[in-house]
Length: 281
Image (cartoon, helix red, strand yellow):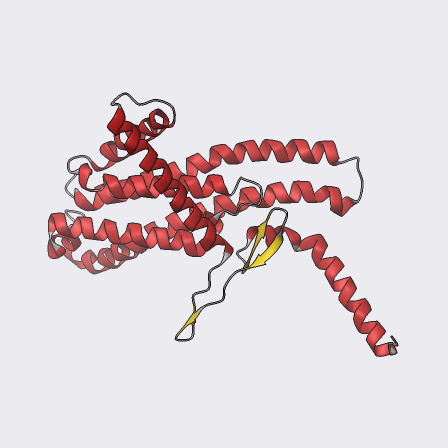
């Protein structure tokens, strides 16, 4: 095969671009969503591309792992419910999940919402376990963390926002709910300003929920990849013990962060629901 000078230049530039991107872009390749999923011993498998009236609703890697998290939760709680039907004394995994359920109920939902917390307990338990399982799946080799996708965390925050507003309006009525946003004793001339501030505050709460979960889950994975990447970027074996040791430490820390972030998202959602429902307190 014969190449012209221009072709040789193009090929050289392409190789240089690939090498440069491999030094800096491979980290984000493992963090960001994609239309391919990596399967052990098979490699990259493309996912179906779907459009609905011009809107891209393709199945992506993070969507697959969200579905996997749902299937895992359905399977676990089906097993737990069956074990309770056989025996009222929980053992093994049933005992573990009873501890987690009681923890969410007694240490998160009940103290922050108070009277009437039972109505919101199923939603908050679902949020807690879904985020927890998604976080842990991302720590498994070949796994992906769906909660490191801003679209996923934003959707969870929007659902929480709807539940918060609906709970407040059902309990206090639409007019009473928005009236209760203004603190008592505020001068009349300050009410329009306070109303704008409080309405903006309604939207900043779910925004903070989405960004906090997204940023924390993304940052941990980037740090782990960056530490391991030092071995290949510096092209020396001297940094291997240090990089692996620090990466292992951050990985163990990520196990704790996975639980903490599920706890924080659930606790803040529960707290905001309690503030909306019991405005007089």
